[in-house]
Amino acid sequence: MNSAGIRKTVGIGVAAAAIGCGGGGGGGGSASGGTTLPTATHAVTTARAITAPADRALMVFLCPADCEPFAVVDASGAIVAQVATHDRALVDVAPGAVTFYALAGAEGDRISGEVSAGGVYYAAISTHGAMPRFTTVSPRSADGRWDHVAEYLNDTHETEIDPAHRAELDAQVVTPQLRPRMTALDTRAGEMDATHQEERTIHAEDGTATPPGTSASGM
Image: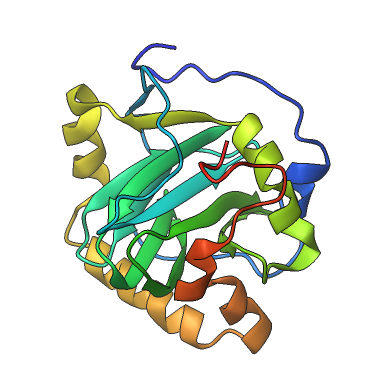
């Protein structure tokens, strides 16, 4: 795979269906600004073990189905990852309160909550009808998503933002419209019903759980 981001093709199957790809409600929202994002990632040379440093938490962002490129932005407005079809990205973060936004073109969704040092937290990004859907994956998840984490990991490959393409991605995402987009997604999340809010909430204690079918390192 080169820096242009050539993707492997695998079957979506039951595991991808569990994260809500394909139609229905409960997806993310639209905000102004943006077109289809450039792919700014490349495959990592050696995939890292899915473990967190002792003083940090690890976020694992998964896109196990067919999705356009999403930029993942933190609460400061910095792009921390980009994922597209069958990608995963691993991001070390400071423990405490966190919020992440998945942005694709004019659309977006967000998750938020608390993470603890040493914890590993999973989140899935998918296209839900015409809208992006960004949800946590934990033992609390509905539709058996937690039971499919091993499949998600098997059906994705680890990528990271390519420094050679970082400026192009920043130019499309980190604009004067970014903060209003984030605020709009925060407002929309606050207006969701309890079920959809829970799908987008990170609980600190979930970072100690090991997904079925994986080792303590997540693979």
